[in-house]
Image (cartoon, rainbow, N blue to C red; front, side, top):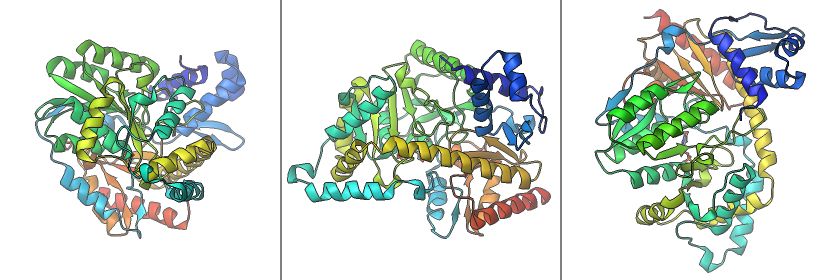
Length: 468
Ligand SMILES: Cc1ncc(COP(=O)(O)O)c(C=O)c1O
């Protein structure tokens, strides 16, 4: 059930989208909204805070809330149609962008990972050294499905959210990326059609390229998420073998599906008997108070993939798939490809999770990421030229679009020459439909270096637009 404050937030968001409230308009005071809506002050306050965290409105000291500047411009958000690609050829471009972003002297707005200084490095180091000291010879290698303590710890985390997943259903992998790749491989053969999002996390496109699959890219709207009409169209017209989606904090848009869309999505997939691979790496990085339930909670057949890369340590490379009845197939495939996931790392993670520091850490991480995103969002809205749209969403990314017809890859190259990385829109689709867009990682601290980098990025965007 959607909580009251989320319902109210969605109502207000709808009013902003419909133009009832426009950029800069003062919203009714909390007290007036309490009177009009019949909700409690706490519900109204939570709704306003949620909208603020998503960038729809801004809190003004001593004067309530106003609609944030620059919401979605119709010119830039026209929905692309369902896009069918018989072949995906994107890896070379992504490889070059990711390699270039490795330089430690860059301001890494192009990175996919949160600022690693936010991770509990000392506590993890303690767990690692504890494990290393006591590692017995038979613990050196753990074959699939992976370390039992860790699988139990993950199952307990599902249980705490009310989702029943048995440890036997879980396979530990090298990050979520291996979990997702193995899941896709288990479900498909070369030449099969697979549904992905448009824009999509580039890892999905790389996997499709590697496995010689065909991609059906279903549009995702910055505000409402996956276009279920286009999905129905895809499922009706093509023999789809798998669907790879994010229902929460979609990368790169940050949008999450509402409860009704989730149910409709699952009903559609059930109707067409298409298995779902749910990429849920941002499960713990929700805005607001309550963790959203994964689609796996509503349907046992979903292959639910996640990891600790976005919340604990990128380099641990520990993820998992909750694969239900397909767990044995995944294990056999893993054994053939990577043999197993690093045993000492799995044990160290199990040790860390047993210490009960994780939830406290996550609480702080969410708060800091939200504060940072708000700071960057505000600066970008103030400094970028009017023609650039900044689309706020959940998580620690912002999705920006230049005017139609422009190429954000040019902005990417210019920024890179000044030691600033961004993730150009071309990374997120097999086609060219997001060429004018780019993604910024706003998990970095706001300091003189990042402030200067944002100012340069805004100046470069202005030059690019003026030069057109
Ligand atoms: C949406 C999404 N899925 C999966 C991954 C891969 O996660 P991991 O680093 O755990 O392999 C990433 C990493 O950037 C991602 O953004």
